[in-house]
Amino acid sequence: MTVTAVPDVAGRRPAVRLRKLEDERWLAFALLSPTAVLLGLFIAYPFVEGVLLALSDAKVGDPGHFVGFANFAKLWDDNIFWTSVWNTFWYTGVTTVFKLGLGLWLAMLLNRHFRGKALVRAFILLPFIIPTVLSTFAWKWMFDPTFSVINWTLFHLGFISQRINWLGDPGLAMSSIIVVNIWRGVPFFAISLLAGLQTISPELNEAAAIDGARPWARFWLITWPLLLPVTLVVMLFSVIQTFADFQLVYVMTGGGPANATHLFATYAYQIGIGTGLLSQGAAVSLAMFPFLFAIVVIQLLYIRRVEVR
Amino acid sequence: MIEGALWRRWVFYNIPLILFVFVLLFPFYWMIVTSFRPDGELYRPWNAMNYMPFWTNKPTLEHFRYLFEETDFGRWMVNTMFIAVVSTLISLFCGVLAGYALARLNFPFAGSLGTVIFVTYLVPQTLLFIPLAEIIRDFHLGDTPWSLILTYPTFLIPFCTWLMMGYFKAIPKELEECARIDGASRWKAMLYIIIPIAVPGILSSGIIAFTLSWNEFIYALVFLSSPEQKTVAVGVTSELIRGDVFFWGSLMAGALLGSVPVAIVYSFFVEHYVSGLTGSVKG
Image 1: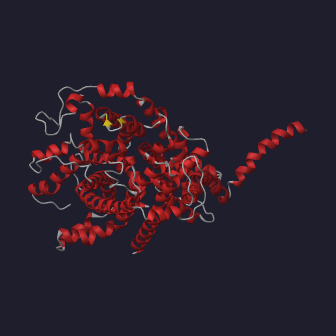
Image 2: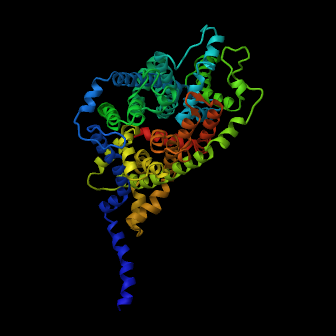
């Protein structure tokens, strides 16, 4: 009897478990647990660890002690840190305005019927698809002080008479980086906004045109308000990605010349990984958090308001 | 669309569009030309008389040879492919299940968990890379592909979950109810009825997840140290720049080849990619 009972028990156990999955709460628990484990281990835990690290004086190979807000106090007196803060805001602000403007323009150019439209749409997304580090190297090569094709072009068009050291001059370096970021971001804006434009019925525009509305008025009174919800979400993603950007600056200038082009992330990398002052680097990274948090909250509240209206 | 005379169409539509396409694609053209150009032509100053930017008379495969014979480029490609594929599969598995639960099941805190997923979707990698490097070291994962395979899902899962929630919400409840009436259990209805319908969504999330992991840089830069473990982006950055010397020809050749897998996947699934991208911003 006992021998036959063994397969019976083994056969029933999974059945009991599966019956539990009939209950939506158990099923939800089972379905969400792999995600919860991974996100808990590699987002929540590092976040707590990051806060503790930023409050200590840990270095590579030295766990360090609790020092309170000493790291942040040090950052407060650090000129390079304030340059990075200013750079990050400037970088995010300027690129977002241009990405939105140019992206919207490109979306409107694509929002009509013409031959080869699908092909054009596929090709213009390439800057967004191709790994950023790799395409940024192409730009760095184009900006090379001695071999620059941009200098050659500007010279032959008669705009300049001598070379421009795009990445060697502190002011120009930031502008060059901004150009590359805009180049990379415009396709994402254009394609997302194009999808938004396609949901707007052309009859609305035609009706307004018959009523005598000029193109500019049609844009501001019909297209823009209807496009606003999509625009805001696209901007939310773009602003956060840009604010926390690393790759582009790392490849183009590494934060130079003379620390003039650091963003939060590149400065955190230079201190934390480059010189091994883990706690100080973690503090720079973490200093990003209140700003990111504020951006997310403000944008989400605004999106909700727009969507309710 | 209301359009005017032929010249207006050129001035307002065609010429701006051509300019956009030109600027957006030129760096890739530049990448291709450079990677086939012999060093003798490559290192001519821009103001030299014989500077010939847009074409090369003596194309060479020398830079590609250097890449494969003098560096671990082949290994980097294999590493990157392995990491991208495995982390995408893990993220799809987790994301599809979580998306289903959040979109279609009733349970306490479903709404707030959805918000948590959306917020983690917005956490940038640069916020956590230093503590994460410590944790990776504590887990003895440093300098292995698993350090990336396990951490990439932190930004891929929230994305997949978010996208899949949208797809699952669009599937009518009745389909599932029919299956239940016919005797299918709760999870069988999910597995055999709902998930097959959501395949286009799964494909979109998978493709975007693959391109995102191929694109990732800072974790790979910080977690990997030995040359044979590196991914393409990190390998190219660290091994083709020696001090102040840039091996531009090989760098561009590496950038070109490193972009090919993503470009191929993208070209086969453009429509899925675009619908995933636009689906993710509709929210």
